Length: 93
Image: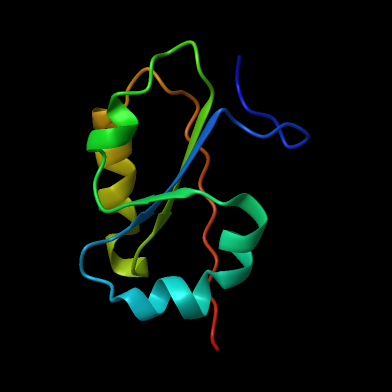
């Protein structure tokens, strides 16, 4: 079963790109963190371990110029998780 807007997934990951500092998490994603309480990861190793019968969302926080690369990494790294939804939010604090 897929996660839907009215239902939280079984697992929710926030992938913070390795080239971003911790200040991105605390400044730009504070409200996101407080709302969804995701597990913070810096690569796709842990999300790959989640069995297919559980719902999962991976939200990627990365620089705009690396968004396409992360999309490819998600599609190749977790191919059984379709569809992949893109959401780009630029926040200035």
